[in-house]
Image (cartoon, rainbow, N blue to C red; front, side, top):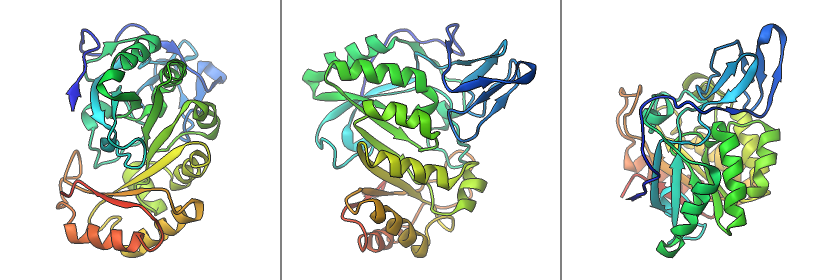
Length: 302
């Protein structure tokens, strides 16, 4: 991983905020945000569940527009995307906030904390990515935190990047409403979507979200761009072979050629009470998945 500088950083929220898309004004100066399936109703001066959208005087604003908290040049395989321009590099950027509350979060420092940020415009970020083409860069990956809640900035940057002949990659939890997803997809070349488990109870209890909304995202996106999926296999929570089999049968019903990454869990954030996933569990899960899918990879193993 090569670090890339975008300029000076400073701690905390920065001054500029951008009027958000996908909201309605409702009674008593509240707003209804429908960017994601949480459908937050936000009172004045309050934040949505993602911590990145705020009601300011009865209008909804994006607090993270142009705020970059993490940036680096990564191998495309690190996203992970194994079947999309293998061997290439991609400029990876992220901001703060997330619309899920996963207790095992691997990037909690930026998803659920208040990290330093650097400010940049969509055009300047696209220009930076274009400057790195001689180093093997193919485009921009919106990653590290949840890119869908960075929607306005990601949308504007994706358009600028496409005009320069660059690719756009989303590394996402898939928890986005259908309208914004369909508005963004024409500018997206590839997605790695987390399918964190294949039970509604896991999503409700562990992530504070809904599985069906993520499944809808996968089904729509797979028709429009290259899609790969990732499941972090957690002991005794989502590692049952029956669940892996059911999930891969659903994936195969969309396309047997969608790659699935089964990743090894390590204790993190608020989930410190479970051991790392045994390698044998992942090997057995892969064997079961390969009965239905053509491409199944193991992550965090070798």
